[in-house]
Structures are given as structure tokens and as C-alpha cells.
Image 1 (cartoon, protein in one colour):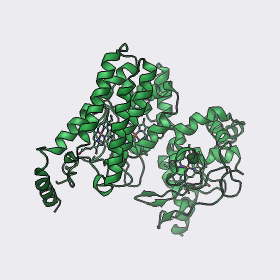
Image 2 (cartoon, each protein chain N blue to C red):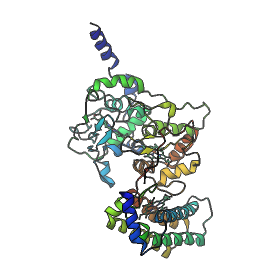
Image 3 (cartoon, rainbow over the protein chains, first blue to last red):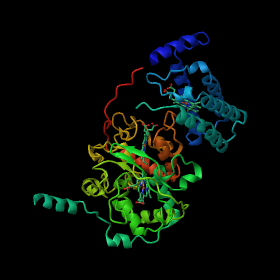
Image 4 (cartoon, rainbow over the protein chains, first blue to last red):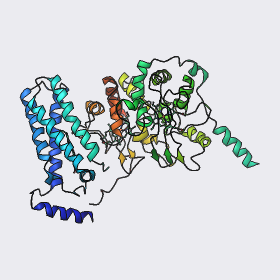
Length: 145
Length: 304
């Protein structure tokens, strides 16, 4: 049944979007988010000397990814199958999910606009951006052990 | 007749065992400022706050959550300083007996859903400090509902036998005498107040943790998820460095910057309130615990 719904919604979306595998694509973007956060945290942890240009590049990457994951075509209803950890709440509370996406876009955009000049400022920005990851994951992901 | 002897033996074996006089006398007044660290390490709010409480109201320890287990549903009670509904009238000794021996002031056994099987390893001075801190928390009136347990789990006396098997104040992982100080501190925080083993260690049929597979992961008590293996064995966290573990406990991000989820979210928030050296000590200890493969059965991925 689930498969059927998935097939139907994929067909319906096929008209407007060109994602062959939305789950793989959004997971790829999420992993890229992780990489950018990891690169930023190396500065915060003092593993690398602060590099303003690279920090801006990583924040810009996050902001671009935030735009990309906001594409509804990446989240076709019922695509929480297989090893996806997407929660059905994404569709049950579509407005809440949209609000989480919008906040992520806004917070990453303002981090880019006010690019941090030192580690202290970066810490604050990372906290603001990073809280989006955890709060959306807590609300809209399930664990599949 | 034999039945009578059996009953008498049962009665003796199940008798609550309190702390000795010297330990009680040595508790002293406690230091509330130091107690705060133990309070967060012990995660008391995770079970004793009101269901759904957020922010500062989490410090109102009114009880009332429902903890579903295979043995029934436990409801943590009010442990605020309210003299009538909370524990405001308890002596430091009453408190220490509850935390370290699972014995209530009236002499009855408490259920190990209050994780005294771990708290038993706490240092009595830390328990006294913890109690001093708890007295500074808001007083809340009102009792939480009763547990929902069926026979035989509703008979507290029977817990005495269980406690003989599973209640010990001895460390789980033996460390060499020359083990670094922070590994010993980490052992204390993990095996004692942090009660990490209560979730991360598989349990046997009667609900005791299997120390031979310490921290190797387990089927979650609630729901159908798993709690991961945090040893360096197969399926565990061998690839995490000590600083990865400490950063996870501080920020909630895994080494690939996935974020902490499930029951660990609250634990992580509590760990973030400890000192950096506490989190580093926990990491150092986790790197020294014996490696085990996953303590939960392999699962087939859910059908699509």
C-alpha cells in the first residue's frame, strides 16, 4: 500500500520535478550540511587557525543547501520508506516542516550576511545555525536502529 | 511447614538493607553549589520533571511522566522540597538510602526504575551535595499518580531478591592501579550518577543489566528502537576519537554532524551542563571499556 502511494505520488511529481531519487538527493544535501558544519567546527575547536574566507565559503554552502533542501520535490509524500529516517510528520504537519525549512534558510542567510570576523563570532553563528539541525531532526526524523 | 520456612527465608532474604550508621553520620550538610553538577550528571529532571516541561519549569520536580517498561508503567513521584507531597521532610540519610540502596524512609523497597543500581556507586559526599542542591529547587504541591503494575511486580517486598542479585556499589570495569585520573573520573560519572549503562547495556530476562556485555547497546525499553553500542567493538564507536565523544556530549553532533536523537537528547543536554573535563573524562573512560559486538540482535531493515 505504502509502495503504491509512493508510486502514485512519484508519478504525480514526475511532471514538475526531475529528481530521480529524492531520498538520496536530500540525504546527499544533508551530508553536505554535515561536512560544512564539520569544517566550521574545526575552527571553533582550535584545530585550524581562523580563515575568514573559508568560513564565509562554508556558511554560503550551508545557505545554498538550505535553499536546495527547501524544494518540495525532494520531499514527496510517502517517501519515508526503506532506510529513510524521514518522519511521517513531515506530511502530517506540513506547515511545521515548512516553518523549520524557512527558519533554516533565514538563519543561514543572516550568517552569510554577517560573516563572522573571529572565532568568538563564529561560535555564536554556529550555535544559531546548528540549532536548526537538531530541532528539525527531533521533530521530523525517526530512528531506524 | 516447609512452606513456612520458605516464607521465612524469603522474608529474610528480601529484607531492605540500609547504609551503615557511619556512612549516614558522615553525610554532613552538603554543598548545594557542588551538588548542581551531580544533579545534571544524574539526569533527575529527565524522569522527575512534569511531562513536557521545558526551560526553567524543568526544575519543578513534580513527577508524573509515564515510563513504559516490559514490567509495567512507572510514574516517577514528586521529589520537590514540598514537605507533604515531595521529599522536604526527608533527612539526608533517608535520601541517601533511597539513592544508594533503593530503600524508602518507611523501609519498603523502591523500584529500580529509579536507577539506584547505578547511583549505588556514587560517593556519599556527592549524594549529600546533591541533596543540598535539591533543597534549593522550587517546592511543588501535588502527588503523581500511582504506578500501573500487575502481579508479581506490584509486590515491593519481592524486589529484595532482585536487589541481592543486581545491587552493588562496586565498579563494573576494573582499572589498573595506575590508570590515569581522568579515566577513573569518567568511570565514576558513567557507572555512577550518569547511569549510562541502564540504557546502553542489554538486560537479562528478569531485568538486570548484563555486565559481561557492558555498554554494548540494547533494545530500547520503550518503543521498538535500539540504544547504540558505545564500546569500541563491532557496530560501536571505535571510529570516534575522544574529542569526538566529548564534542557529542557538549553539542549533540556526531562526527559526521548528524544530530543526537531519541532518549539521548535529554542526556546530552544534561552532559552539556557539566565541566569540559567531565566530558573529556567520560570520553577517556569509554575508550578503555572492553570492546563488545552489538548487545542487541541484528535487525532486518524495515520493508519498503
